[in-house]
Image (tube, rainbow, N blue to C red; front, top):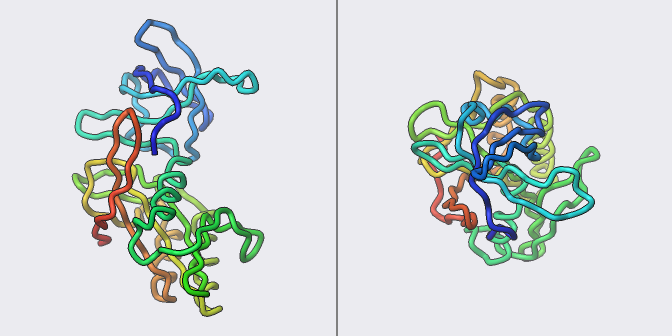
Length: 230
């Protein structure tokens, strides 16, 4: 997935109200950018952090910059959580996700007023796929999800488990949206309810897949070599 507009380097001043970030561009201008991340961005929102933003000239948008990447001394991190679905969709359509080749549909209604990120129809069998963007790492090499409590995430796991009961396949796909991790685990101390829901979903037959990406200010690429879930 390539960014539509060339990203600009900037310095983070502060992130607030979940979806706003004040930044300083390299030309000295201080502006407010849209921060498309509902999580805590734990470890990624320190003042002075180098970030990458995407400008836009859309007259319908009040904010003319969108926060896309955080550049740490040791890693690049995709903080726009919407990018994960775009990357996974490209990978699914290209047949790059092992075991998930087939007719790909997006945002399909299912369960209790939910929408699956993707439905893959493979040989007449439904495969329901939910995608989560993983940005948290508190231990070298270990990616964790979530970075804050997520009742919605636990609900998705329950919906996937119900699909197994109907005879379908169901997949929770974690996209590790940073380039310094080779292991993954649920952040049980942050959200024990989610961690328990994931354990129950696995026991019910929900498949857990974890994949990395490569990250540059030009774009994000899916890596079909899976990451170990511990």
